[in-house]
Length: 304
Image 1 (spheres, rainbow, N blue to C red):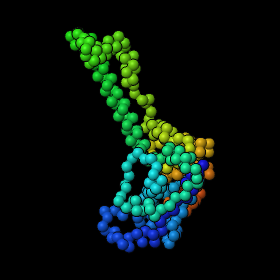
Image 2: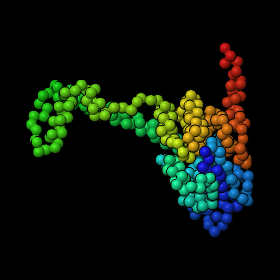
Image 3: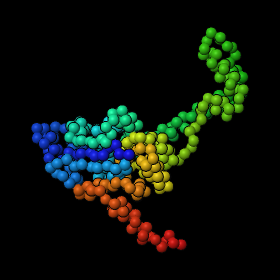
Image 4: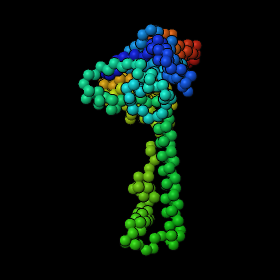
């Protein structure tokens, strides 16, 4: 499914016109102005980037992949979790851009935008850290309960002796004590839902974040989703993305270095390192050729 079919970036002339009556030195930063200048072929008219159901922006660090995703996300007002480099000139820049949406039905598009979002590496890493902190906090709570239970057994004077029926706190304290002593520690912990999230690796937690975040019928901008994922999980994610695009009406615009993602069948690939930026075959991307040449050089070692 294609929701966003085209996005127009301002020409060099458009950007220059913006500053004719403004002094660039007035601003702390003119980003994203001039950041993508010269990367697109059309200097005197807007550059149109065309999208398929899966479009991937390939390129080295600093090539503008993430900038393009952030500009599109802000233009379409997509949901995002993590902050990014939003300067005071972002809004004026967005006014110079245009987007073409293929869905005319406003209700349908409203439903699409409700689930659509941009997912960045920061989102994934923050999720991984959040899971780790949650488990650490739960471990601490269990230790407190264990120590308290042992103290009750060793020192009867610590046990509640009187119950104030008019005091909710007193009643709750006695109820907690009774439950704690009447059950095994494991049963008591389970009854209080003080259980760790399943102990996945960082990469598995990252992969699960994508699986849970990507819902049917949405436009998803993924910024280097391969970060934190093993080669095997990158393959699984590429298969999941392809399946969601093919069977569940999703559209993806992705920035990536990963040959596993770049090789997704029928994906449209833009080489952000090329001058001008152009659509290419994934096999022709310099970064992919480095992998190819490396394994070709060591081919005999794989034939043992």
